[in-house]
Length: 92
Image (cartoon, rainbow, N blue to C red):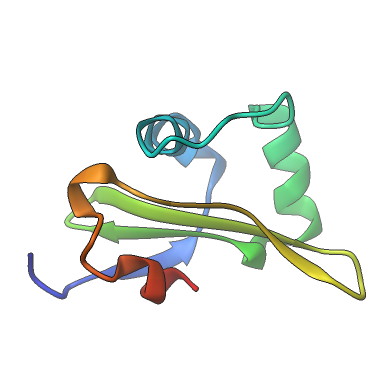
């Protein structure tokens, strides 16, 4: 695997790929993991939802929240095919 990674903010057009990645990585989805809720997330704090790609392939995501005092990582996922290669360190 080459090191030519691209980090960028999530865009709603990524929704299906991200949901597929989350499911394949074992993330348990909640009712708020839907297009409408994620559009609202993008309006609030788009910089806290990042995708990691390589050659147009989605390798990982991290989605966080911040309430003004505390921050959380809600979902951190790396594609099962790319796990064990330290990509989580790029995302966090």
